[in-house]
Image 1 (cartoon, one colour):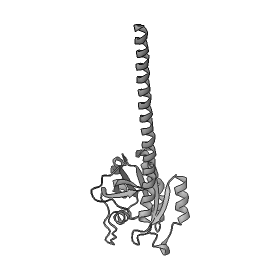
Image 2 (spheres, one colour):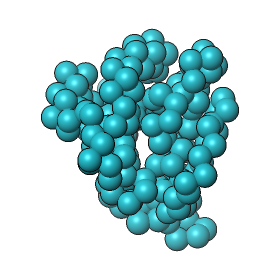
Image 3 (cartoon, rainbow, N blue to C red):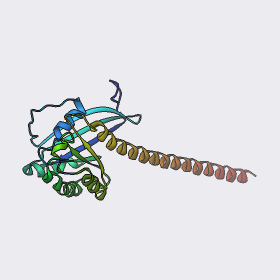
Image 4 (cartoon, rainbow, N blue to C red):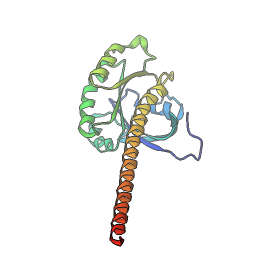
Length: 215
């Protein structure tokens, strides 16, 4: 569910999309952001990003999706864009075996530059082309499990699992942040309570000392 206009986001989530050129990263992002699909494919040059305001489990979230070029010559300039990312999506094309084999290279790439606690999602795109499938679903699931990633298969063309895949990732991110903030606030409140107790104890001690002097 998207946000009501004018609502202020409680969370900002930067998500980076990576994978080989032609696997459909831009098409999936456009389907997620604008619910549109076009056959007129134009390769992303360098970096592009889109924004969508959403309601994720009752939390108002500003989602920034960074679309990175898959061509080899652009991989070096994308490393700076991993900074601050709370989620990384690696995408391959189920009809392209090479794009699946290159997933391990992309894992190495983002593991080098992204934060250690970034949430990860592996997507096998173009599941509408079942008759052309070269990568079985179980292969994607196994790789995701080995690499400690979530997994989904999508189709930007037929709008299959696109929102579900993003919600799967965003829910994990927001739940983690909510728990971290709760622990942080409990720690702050505990410190404040302890400080108040110390102040009261000092006042009581000083008051008793003054009373003894008077006596």
